[in-house]
Amino acid sequence: MSTLTLPIVDLGLYLKNKNDPLAIIECKNTAKALKDYGALLVKDPRVTEADNSTFIDLMEDYFDQPFEVKLKDARPEIGYQVGVTPEFKEEPKCHRDPNCQSIIDQMPEESRPLISTGPDPKWRFFWRIGDLPKETKFPQLNAEPVVPDSFKGTWPTIMNQRGNQMHQAVVGVAEMLSVGFGLPANTFPDLTKYGPHLLAPTATDLNKYGKLDVICAGFHYDINFLTIHGKSRFPGLHIWPRNGSVKTQVHVPEGHLLVQAGKQLEWLTGGEITAGYHEVVVTNATLQAIENAKISRPNRPLWRISSTFFLHVASDNMLQPLEIFNSNDTLYPPIFTGDQIKRELELISLMKA
Image 1 (cartoon, rainbow, N blue to C red):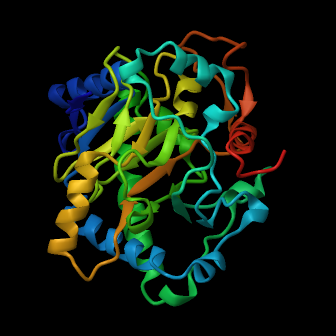
Image 2: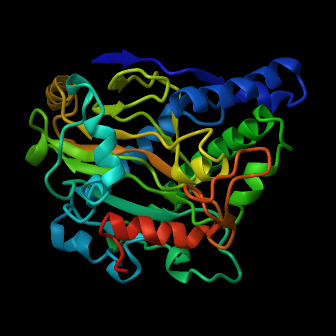
Image 3: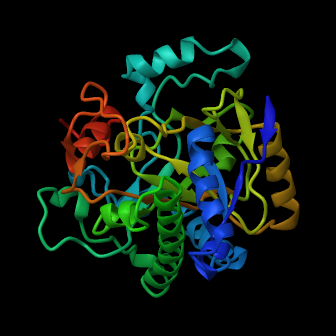
């Protein structure tokens, strides 16, 4: 298995002068990277590693609470779309998706994901970012945020600061992507206005599950438009780039963010960009990072936190390929984005049909 440094896009260059020829080239590189790899690295001068560290510290403290305390923050009645999702609730889609199983069957043995046999052992917290729509057909997907009782003094400030940083960064990538495809700059960002965007950290208890080849997040793609991640303190992310590369470990350099294409972007481009499959597992590098953490941070909770943000197309927008892309009503029929999300949530056992 190889280690991949993905193409790097300089968002700062684009923000400095959006009409600069070098900025336009960077936009074209954004489109090419997402077509070729389904992922890229972005450098945004507005986002700092110190902010990421503050956020991860808060998440470690939150998830290290007793099970019953965290469970008060769960909202199963709305498919866990705000608040906490407990471990062993979210099931990798491949368990119920013949197409996903077919993709795995066609892979060389050495490039296949580890096969999970049940729900993931990870926890997750969904914190709503951005303006809510005044009216919507999908209130379940646009609920008010949950504030944990034990963190009322700090939670909204840190979550909103981190969430807004990630939001502006990934919307910047969406704008660059629009320009890269020769579309007006606001094309993709406008589709995401009033979307149910989520700061969505995952958390795996490495005291319980920090063993080689434990699957933290089984083989899957993201169901939203674009996903953006800060650097995790513990490695373990594998991706399957579209350009034909084998199963690959992702290295995120300091000061960079990882962006991945989701299913809504695939839909809007008629498959020109495809949602990237990925998994998170405990590797030898994870085990080494655990040992290092025990020495360098002996009094801190031992949880693997992903600093993740999901950018969504607005629930009440119609999801269908844009005019410049090939239409395919079999694979990408017109559908309200909220209905697309609800169907995907049913497949991963978070929402009942």
